[in-house]
Amino acid sequence: MPLPQLSSIRCLSHCSRYKFENILRGPQSLGARLTREGFTAVPSPLHPTPPAKYYSGGYTVQQWGSSVGTTVDAIQLELPFHIRESYKKTGIVIASVLADFITDMYILNSCYMNIRQSHVTQRCFSQLFWDFVERLFYI
Image (cartoon, rainbow, N blue to C red; front, side):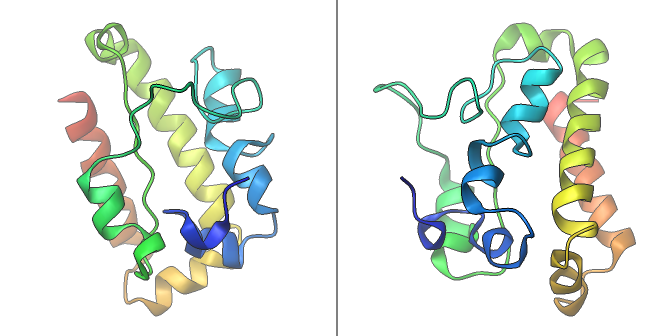
């Protein structure tokens, strides 16, 4: 079982009303939300652990995620080509799922206060999110 303090979502695990297991692979997880929309996601309730040969995360997650002591959580998404290729259809769905996850986990949680205390306003946070979505899908 992964330890919250070793996770790139360590900050979320400390301020969330949900248990770490639920955030990571339970019904409230990003993976569960993507699965409900028809995507395969790891980790999720259907796929709680990755297969033996699995990409463990890129430089940004390992270098800047909250597992290294920062206050910025990091989640990496790896999307297969067929999903990226049909971004006009899937991009809106994935962006909506991400927005729902961020809203539930950070803004409706006490975690939003941590964001505000870090001098990142909601407007700035939203802009960072939509910049990410645009880069993710090359919009």
